[in-house]
Figure (spheres, rainbow over the protein chains, first blue to last red):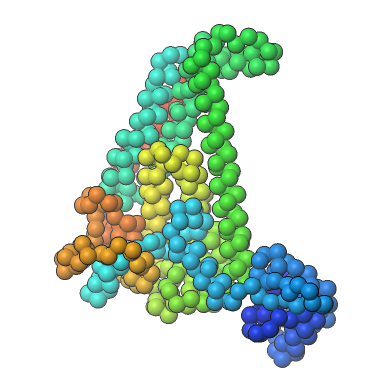
Length: 128
Length: 328
């Protein structure tokens, strides 16, 4: 049985790849298919997967602000709030931005560098 | 008891202003980052202790010969609703200020911890969806991004080191190893605890020069400590090259044009040194110049001297506050 974390990742991959919003049923079928395609080598995502489990995963993703539900339709259709690229960009912005309160959150190999320093370092590389 | 409070007040002022400014300009911390780190911690702790202690001792002066007797008398007044007439306005003011400052420091420490943890949790959640595990080892993930980026996100057993595609493409295997060892050193040496404490210290008292200088110094010193760990297994040239490649690929375009710097462009490999300009050299620049022109480690005598100062800084306010009570 796949962990909820693995399922969240698999569901997000499907929603990011697909253009349209999908219902929990559709997602369950797609998850089952992708497992069959991989011949089970990539774990047991989707095998014997209940729709309620997919709904649980979707509501967890909704709480994290990654997935939104279309109002008014039954059964509910889900879509990704923003694209994979946008999320990556947001994350990298957080990493590269130099807001003082963020400095304690993570430790970067290289902190903020000014253009002048970068130029000096490029020269250094050229000479070595 | 009166001279105690004056002495503590003087100590607090000296540790809040001249000492951190002198230390932040000194060159020896690059030669012995570990000792310098201890000294900054001692300055922070002793500074806070003497600040609160001075006000407490002053406020309790009329009702007790020492801190412990004074606190007992104060507790008696508070809990038995005894008249506080023995305490003048300024004594009550100092006592309230000491209580408020203590509460403020503790509260900010906890609040900063909560904020940092919340951001880290959110970051880990997104990484779990966006990044894929690396072949370089457990706890290392790769994220799909063109800029060369490497960082570690501390979180106990869930600590993770993140590398970008751009970084993997730009670095040779040995350089990549240097980066990974550097990041692991941050995690192994628990640098995030230092970052947390000094971030909270600055958040609590942003107008105090010592808190900003201390945070900047600590940010820089942990990088030097991690570099030193990387140097144990990888060559100096490899590390310098890794730093240079990552730094030159991740420069932040400045909003102001850097015309002033153009003239100095041809002067060779001179990296800005801390003493040169009004602005202290960035962490990256001081790291590289430290690797390019290494200076001998601090002589044992000096090192012992600094460590003694650390001990005295912590012992003096503590002893002044507690010992008279134990003797009396």
